[in-house]
Length: 197
Image (tube, rainbow, N blue to C red; front, side):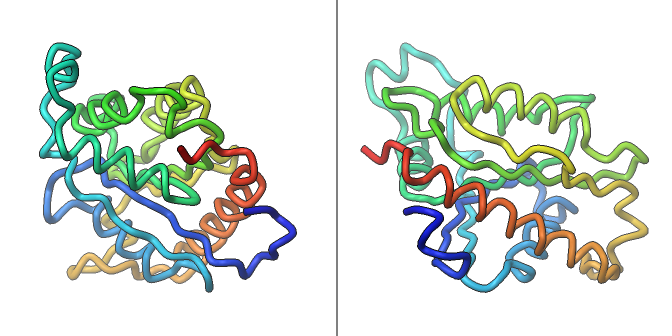
């Protein structure tokens, strides 16, 4: 897939939520991203992070868990990767880091030359800025290309979502659409050199 194929070329994103809570604001943000995706962009949520055991090479040498194999396969087939995550104790949620560790195994890495978007919301004024920097460092080390600034950080979520956990701020919806469009642009540039096997 190359940039010459045009901005309206179908672009498929696989996405994960770093929270396991059903009523998570970051899960709500993911649903808003699906609804706000620009024309031609589809988002598939991989929702099996809780099914993966803690990474252990002894387990891997016997048999890699089906959930980890499935995660690697959807990343391999996708045009881009989106992470929507909270920040736990100024860092990565364990379930998210564990999934990345499982998916990082093997050569070539499914993360090599992969366009990555990172979004997050929190009740605090700083949003999820610290966890986003950690994710960028980790994924860049695996050969991925996280989107550069401006980051998509949404602080003070109680002022952005209504009682039904729907965004009540049209400017934020526009920001989501523009961010996903940038992810597509980066992905179209990178997909021509991404290993798929």
